[in-house]
Image (tube, rainbow, N blue to C red; front, top):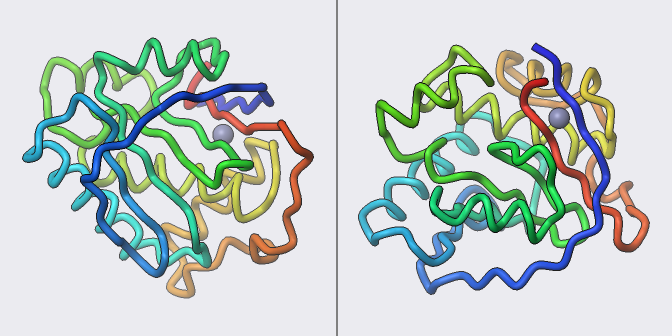
Length: 182
Ligand SMILES: [Zn+2]
């Protein structure tokens, strides 16, 4: 599976509902408009569980869940092409996730098969750990990010192998976005 990252300039007008949950440390899981309260709670629980499993050295980060019906327009706002299921904006300290990664739906699950054979929480762990690899390692390299992802998922120490995020000062306006397959 090939993973590609690219930089993009983006302007976002995303608004988040007041469905905010504090998850591991100072990080937040937020649902954008369109998700029901039940879907939002389910999605937040998934993110919370992933962060509990991965134990990343990360703070002040937002994980924003976007309703799948609004994902296409979100990609357009971020000038994301191809429109991949997850990406991170380093400037905004935010990772954006399509809701189908979090809310069970068999048909939509099939759409995600081309990115990973994993399903459910394991797939979410992989997506989030991959994004964390980019974030914690301050890298656009898919190899480095995926290597860090493996360490976060499978090492008892849950360390990315990279320096903490404080060392990362991205250029203004540069945003990282990932594709999960090519
Ligand atoms: Zn990537």
